[in-house]
Image 1 (cartoon, helix red, strand yellow):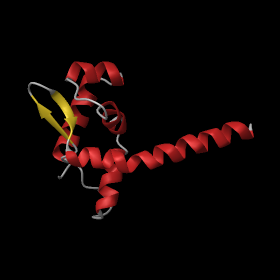
Image 2 (cartoon, rainbow, N blue to C red; image 1 turned 180 degrees about the vertical axis):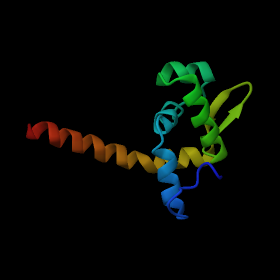
Image 3 (tube, helix red, strand yellow; image 1 turned 180 degrees about the horizontal axis):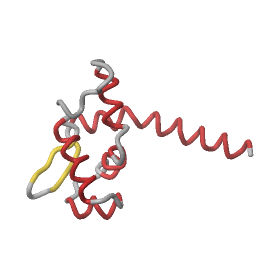
Image 4 (spheres, rainbow, N blue to C red; image 1 turned 60 degrees about the vertical axis):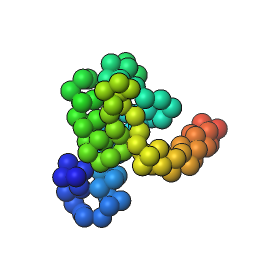
Length: 105
């Protein structure tokens, strides 16, 4: 996983955050949360350029978070589903945070 490794540390959590912090990585995972999508569908769903999407998909595949099937397109691996499930509490926290900020204005 040479492309996934963080340049600053050998800690797995830092390598993961480095990967997920790359442009469009989380959006790709989000779009794959419910169903497998082909490349064209992912392009339409994300609005990202084909070259960036191709790079992100390659990185996520190398990290074994996303897989690819010629017939069904791209999808989350079991580990990818597990990761997304673990991120959902963060989504819930972010929604509550946004509501609090909006009510303070």
